[in-house]
Image 1 (cartoon, rainbow, N blue to C red):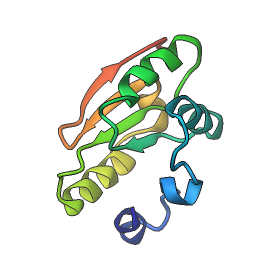
Image 2: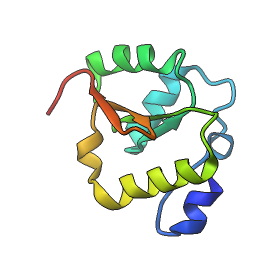
Image 3: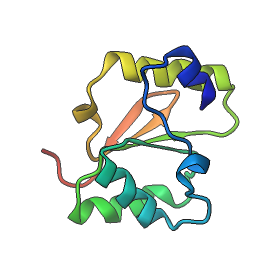
Image 4: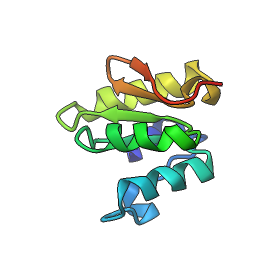
Length: 111
């Protein structure tokens, strides 16, 4: 999301392409994000929620933000910036958040 980094250069944002996640199974992507302490931003409403549910049975996750692909890029950038500015990373642990509504679902062990 070049728009996020362009708007706020202090954000440490890595794309799936840069991380070379194309074709990598969801559980491996979730493990990488957890090991790196990164919140995962994904368009995958089909498989990520179930894999996240399974993952958080045994491990803690920094969280997942699910973004519909049909949303205007500006709206997504605005929402991601709002999350970055108005929350702390520990607020997202083991949670899935639907963008842009910010409906949040706690899954797995809560600390």
